[in-house]
Amino acid sequence: MSTNENPSKKPGQVETTGHVWDSNLQEYNNPLPRWWLWGFYATVVFALVYWVLYPAWPVGGSFTKGVNTITFMQDGEEVTTHWNTRSLFAREMQSGKQAVRQREMLEQVGAMEYETLLADVEAMSFVNAYAKGAFGTWCAACHQTGGGGVIGQYPNLRDDHWLWGGTTERIEETLVLGRNGYMPAYRESLDGQQLEQVASYVLSLNGFAMNDTDVAAGGEIFNGYLGGCYQCHGADAAGLDSQGAPNLSNNIWGLVDVPGAANDEERVARVARFVHQGVQRQMPAFADRLSPTEIRVLTAYVHSLGGGQ
Amino acid sequence: MKHESVETNAGLLIILTLAVISIGGLVEIVPLFYINDTIEEVEGVRPYTPLEQRGRDLYVREGCYTCHSQMVRPFRDEMLRYGHYSLAAESQYDHPFQWGSKRTGPDLARVGGKYSNEWQVQHLIQPKSLVPESIMPGYPWLAANRLDYSDIEQRMIALKRVGVPYSINQEEFAANVERFGEDVAMMLDINRAEENLIAQAQRENFDGDSTFISEMDAIVAYLQVLGTMVDFNEYSAGHFAEFR
Image (cartoon, rainbow over all chains, first blue to last red; front, top):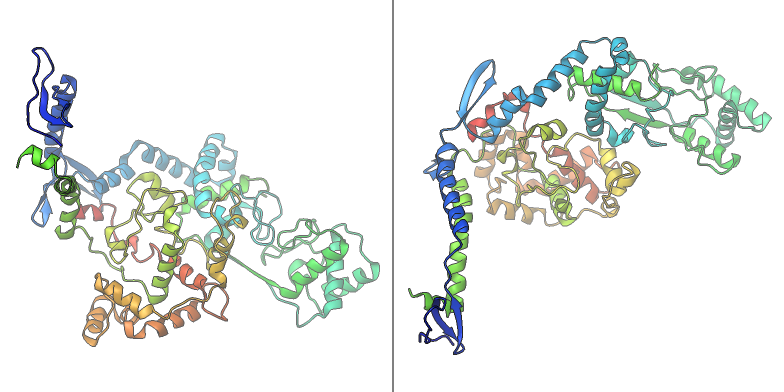
């Protein structure tokens, strides 16, 4: 236990706190280092200055606002408020160096025709930089970082196979209005054999060697009244971008995983199952989420990914 | 009080230490409860519907908050990525709130309406199927589990006790009609909680499976309402600075 007895202290020894534990354990009472002490006083002074400049102490239902102010524009008028992060943010968005530079570039890009824009190296380097963020935020959730898409679900934007057209006008329209892709299910109108025949026909258009009889029968269904597939996909199966109907003859597979099938039998089964089920895919409209300029930037970016027409 | 008596009395030392170190916290936190402008006046913020609230409970149960914050800060880069900064008013009915600064995954304060229901469902079941570089684990059981809403009334009563304006009698209901409009007030009525929950789940069918109400229905309902209650087009750039 501690006792208050002051043990005998020889002259010249360091002063102790005077507490003695377990009969001889003592505690030095050295002064604080000067540099530390002055540092401490400096923080006190800093706090005093800070309290004067910035919002600090609560007083009743409000608080001391500080004398520091921020000026920004609101509804065309200059507004001056006490310092706070929200005003700081408003000012930063209006007149911050990066914000201003970005706005200038957006205005510049927004005023350019697509043809000029796509040919302008400096503007496109801005488009790529800006779209990296915007595409990542708005598009990559489905189309994937880089625009590669997901087979069976979301279209690849890196190739020159387009559902709704790959010109800048069409891409912009897709972004603005969104798209509803629809193919009816043929489970009612075609039986199992007919589904396989249509599948064989479609696969034969893509360079797969299929049974000739099936292909011929499938072709009749595809181009005839029974299937009516030609109405959207076209008699040559080259697709119709006004309907979002894909080209079925270029061996590019967006929704049916034909490349992943092991043999012809499985390929036929996969295509047949798809026709049996039909499909409905939706791309949301971005007109009310993105500004026209942002849509322009994203259009140019998507167009430049690989297959713009 | 003598220095020695504090040093030699552990219980007293603990109490006094707690008192001293709590001063900083108290000075910073307590005034927020009575300063008038802490919670901004803003149109549109309402308590969660029963289904959304159950979704929120699941969000907490699954520990989503350990990787996702729900607080967009007033910085330009956050604004560009997530949208308008979060308001205190937007989490006034959250118990506990989901603010934070640790983002292993992205902030979710404004995720509502950003992706389709189908996307959310598939992403929750297997995130890597949509975002190959994602490190988020899958939550496939949400789609398989039947949602337990047997205690939804009790859950709402508990929230009511901590200040969420769910109504249990005619008087409170009338006050809610006044405050939120009739449609919302109906959803906040504890007496109608179960029927409201079932109706919303069936009407909106968030998980695309109408045969039963799954946990997926609830959590997607919750995700889809996050950050969507306030229409920020109504307010000018510096409007919310008035409250700070």
